Image 1 (cartoon, rainbow, N blue to C red):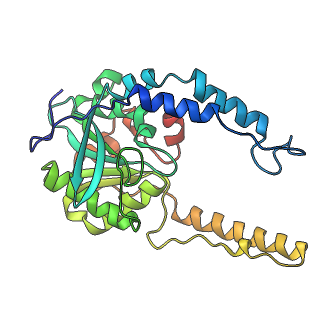
Image 2: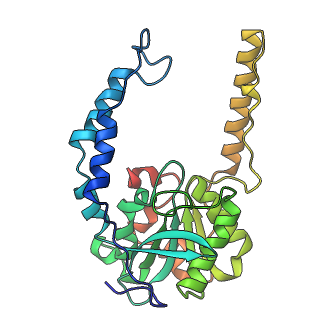
Length: 281
């Protein structure tokens, strides 16, 4: 695989055996609290279920297999606008791949996109048109995974600035496309809002308005349980309505034919907010 422009050196994922063994030892050394009366999980995750999960992480999970799968792609770590950024890359296979940055959400990682990267970078391998190929960049959000440490006041609009700096100044792309879900959708929306002249288009899989704020009225406890239940119901209804109004797919810039719906390959066309879950899962 070729390296990105500007002479950035690859940085494969390599966790030492000492770190892995330390983690397993700390998991095995967990002192489990009593969990009386919580068989149905009404007070939180049942102890038996959590112990089963911990046992899997301590003895069953094969990190080296996961590491090999991740290292099938290029990995880089750079400082962008003073922010440590890790990103994964899959070069596009086609006559003129479009640079595409994918932003994950919370609490996921860059690997959340692993099932669509190959389809986007090499559509011909999945029955699509090689002219639809993308050069795929998947960074870890600041504070997530290998993009650490980071400033405590990072937010989606500041991350959008970092992403734009990464794609233009660090990687040298004059224009690019962007997609994201969850928090990544906010980052992507901000990219489209602030840097529209330098983007071909954006795709958001769980759209939220850039001024969206969750309504937390249901967190205010009242002495009357019935009144509290009504408050929760009203808040939930407002949230559902707000999300319904905000959801959808940003309209691609028509000037770039590769991002027009009628030019999407059958596989790429599945990257739609209504079907994204089917692809990712």
